Amino acid sequence: MLTRPALNRLKAYTPGLSIGEMNEELTQLSSNENPLGVSPLARKAMAQHLSQLNRYPDSNTTRLRETIAKQYNLQPNQVIIGNGADELITLISETFLNEEDEVIIPTPSFSEYDFGANLMGATIIHVSLTKDYQYDLDLILHHVTTKTKIIYLCSPNNPTGTYIKKADLDSFFQKTPQDIIVVFDGAYSQYAIADDYTNGIEYVEMGKKIVVLQTFSKIYGLAGIRVGMGISSSEIVACIHKVREPYNVNQLAQIAAEAAIRDIQHVEASREMNEEGRQYLYRAFEELDVSYIKTMSNFIFVHVGTDAKRIYEKLIHKGVMVRFGGVWGLSDYLRITIGLKSENQLLIAALKEIMNEIDESI
Ligand SMILES: Cc1ncc(COP(=O)(O)O)c(C=O)c1O
Image (cartoon, rainbow, N blue to C red; front, side):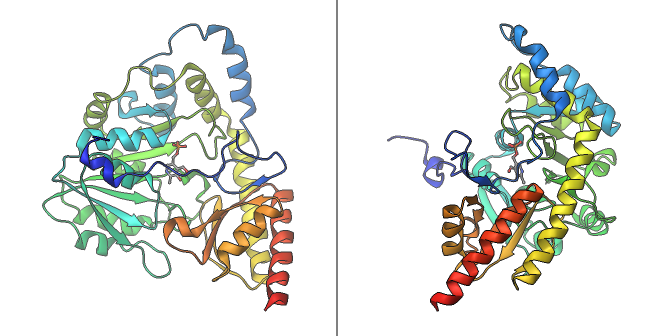
């Protein structure tokens, strides 16, 4: 096929199982969704809105942007809404990247950053996290050249759950050349409880060249309806609007997101449940003598060793779906979403059985 040459570097995305493919019996701990479900306020708002779906949505997502701006003490023209944060990554790439540009992407991290850069034919510079999967911001700065256009930072990072300390980001912004756009992906920021964590919005307020991404797919429980937000200066937001489709966010998504961000009870309950699950899983992994990386997110990157692929497959047979680390080239690891208490217990029971089976077969 005579596609653009840039497409030679692209592969179609391989997702975890989506709902249509999923066996109902399967416990889904592979996509970092909110196991508590849809926010009750969002569910009610969507139900009340069904009769209006003959109309086009608000192209300007006015009410949702106003709600978000109020929440973060910003102006509505500093907020842009996308069909998931995924779409915003593509829009940012389409807005800013030329073929001669370089994009710095931490590794391992979220695959869509590579997708956006490859789509535009830009050059990707991968910079590894440290051996214990922390960010090394000085190493990232070391890779900056006159061609660097975008630096991605993901905190808490997917798949490792590690985060960037505020003091480190402060000094990073002092050293970063003014013309580089920093995309700070805070898809999981609502789960981060460390005192020295920052969701990046303070740097928008300080006038830094940063786009903060957040999503309604995680703590807000709306992965199926696709809403993400970008927060930046009004100038950067205005540029990104130029490449946005007019009706990129459907009516139900706008209504649901507006209700979900106001549903403080649902957010608090989700955070609390995640925290309990995190502590339970830490203890359980320690008892199993399995090492893991401390996480500030709703998933844990677990080092199960050279049998990881086998364990992953055996977990599916026992009804539990997790993510195999091989997709990041880390085939000794599994990324496990923190689920409901019962789901976490099921996972640990299955893991125990599998590890005994493997021990016996040696
Ligand atoms: C780090 C990170 N950023 C962005 C996204 C995409 O979010 P959305 O569902 O809003 O497209 C994800 C989804 O898993 C993610 O892990």
